[in-house]
Length: 361
Ligand code: ADP
Ligand code: DP6
Ligand code: CO
Image (cartoon, rainbow, N blue to C red; front, side):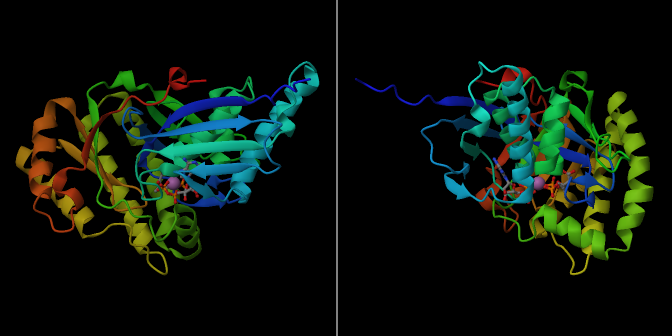
């Protein structure tokens, strides 16, 4: 008699990158990943920068969970990945307990395969799209009835910035007050359609893995920087209010002004860390100068740079200024020493972000 092959259960999702315009930097609780300050991000189009993750489980798999990231084995024994897997399994087990006809997926080993179509660990928020994709792929595999807010809360435990990659559009992550993190949640403040003329352009200055991971960098900043407390307690709360209004009013002048000063304040805090953290390089600084120059020549703010924990620039501008911004940057950067690809690596993005429709099962 033929035995039936073991069943395979599988689900795939695509998650977008989000780039903060008010930066999260510093944890008040590094186990739960609770931030010292609130933050706001813009979700980039998943047509361009994205993580694609497939999660599967089967009785035929060997006994260990396993993650292959960009074709290489990734260590998933870290506490934060384990916290995500544990929580997702717990929720699946509750479903199985209440509905005994469901297959017992919570007890099966998981295989996760993930691809980022952009540089990983280079300051383009791969941990954000990466953990958002990992958590939502397993949630869909397990058919959890969880809301996006529930998934965001789990993804936050994998990487803080990941909690902002579930909703699309403009997303605020409120730091919250509770010790258990129950009020530290990400909220969609406006959908991408609210500001359809917004564009982002990514300058891939270097695809190399950064020397100091975001997790380590912010931990050292909290422990050593004098400026950090002032930034978290005084600067960011004001910027949060003003940035929320700038987005609400589609006020590009204030959006740009705040985005650039926030990026500079964040990198100043990195420099104030001991030992100092240098995420920007000469090419990053050249890009800053070009944007400042474009704005000065135009007599208004037409472009805004921001840099996460890495040398790669994200430049926000409005569709009507496309030729001015993209054209000037392309021709300038073609002559910058150290610019890989002589300007070919400029990618243009509209900011539409993730929606539930993006999920393929
Ligand atoms: P980034 O600036 O790219 O977010 P981080 O230092 O914050 O850099 O995080 C990079 C780490 O995030 C990677 O080393 C990896 O552990 C994790 N990561 C990145 N992409 C994925 C992914 N697709 N799936 C799971 N984990 C990922
Ligand atoms: C500069 O979310 O990558 O990009 O929570 O330790 O994984 P962990 O850090 P991560 O930090 C992101 C820092 C940032 C700013 C931001 O995205 O808000
Ligand atoms: Co990250």
